Length: 419
Ligand SMILES: [Zn+2]
Image (cartoon, rainbow, N blue to C red; front, side, top):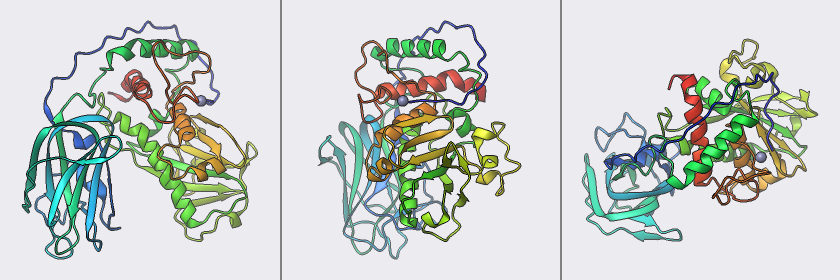
């Protein structure tokens, strides 16, 4: 379901759109790791696994300036993983070890593995153990969605400063070059959007507008429309799950068609609840709003909400602009299905908590798609396209077609931000 805020709709004359697939990007060796998502077997709380694909060349293995990935005090077999939303063709990798001469040292041995879809398989190669330098491994080209660095510790814990996954560019599209078979259905979708939403170019509160207003981040408020208690741990899990799902959409944009953000950090700044006692924490890490009821549900303060302040100024938000929220995650007890729009997403609180560790929370993903303008497909299907997330019930994750629909929105809106 979708619902954008009601605004006065100005009727725009439909504009003919002609889609011409650009010629494929010239094949060039590029670091595809930059568009991957990094994860690891374990990360020391003061380190960051995002360090391994942030594009920063370390000054030395004992880098004290930039963020690092390390497993101290854990030892034994450890791993760091790069995951892409689409398969990448890789031909080499360059690994820079973290070694501080103390608790984190180069491993005793290491190797690369690729994901086959069901298992990790070793990539044959020569694995060096140099410090203060990249260790390069070249191999026969592999196509995979995951590259894993498997480390066996030696005298201490292990860590990495950077992982470059080298392959041919063009796998991660850098411009408007959808697969040929998607050009026609994407054309149909955009014409349908233009004819259905005549004010689509006048509307200024898409997720796009929110991310750009924040220069690459997004703030949320949780509307806890339930009497079920929430521990601090559950609060943090709800935050983490939302960030993981939101990231799936933003990863589609990383590196594409001048989209300026490699990642879009998500922060939950507030919680709204009927009764303060429902929230079982006493720290002040988030703003708490009690019994401010709208639509028969608790909400965070309107002076802090983007929906109510679409100029992007929050003069009456008690904590100032940094405490503003762009969207609400509205979790309603006993609700099935969902709703999404510029105001945020609404799903069942039980659904959310039960799916909190799911790889794909597909209802939430679908509703986030609406927040970025994507439409429903209740009564029609673009020609030649199978199941996809925005056609409710036909897919449970973001498909390539969903990804290209999102990119199409950016293609049509980016000029409003100067791109
Ligand atoms: Zn929908």
